Length: 302
Image (cartoon, rainbow, N blue to C red; front, top):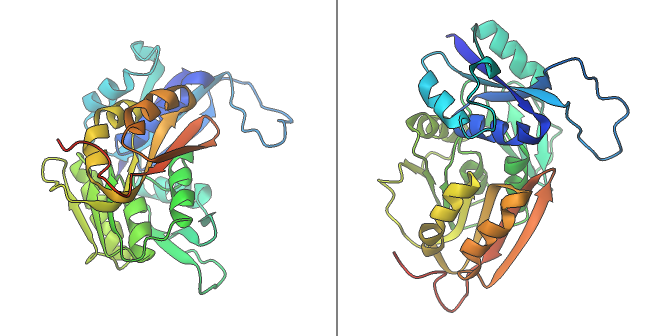
């Protein structure tokens, strides 16, 4: 099978937005490279500096709708300039080599691990391993928003819980919840390729009987103990009534895909439905998490 790579040149301030949009579009991998000759030397401890101009690259299946990708990237400042974009075709062997060079087992919190196919981690009976292979995932845990969600989920007790993963992408969050003992997980996405990837990954991890995949139109709202949504700020705000209405009294919610500058607006959309709300941050990204009132449902029903 062959692949298509799109690259977009952006300023360092816009790199995070371009990266997240490519992941939301179903990119199998997203990488950032220097777009000019501006080496980053001796960065401050604990920082992840970027170049002044960044080339953000997204890898897609060969038959991906290019017009759809370009339309979505139109949200990135300056993207209306056609010279910002480049397309190239990549063969299987190149993609597999890039996967192996880029990815290694990653740990999130105390127990959760993402382990690429063919790789191993030291044995520990408490480890929970999510197995992923090249070509099967739209999200791989390397993006800060996914990492924030996984670390949050690692700290929660979800055994026996009903869980919703809204905007599931590769299904990483839903599969992690299932492996942690959730009794039922509904993975929702408007992209059919994402639902297929989630189903494939669920089978690979032995949780197909726990996970149900559906589109937003097919989603039958039922009260869940945990709702997770790692998408973008604008749809999170629009979906606030629906996601809050899906929470049972005392249920937990985790929201990500939010830039620091967007956090207050997203919080405002959800605060009335939550008894508790807090944030966690990584780089320029924010996770909002909270609990609905244990006495009443989180928000008026739609």
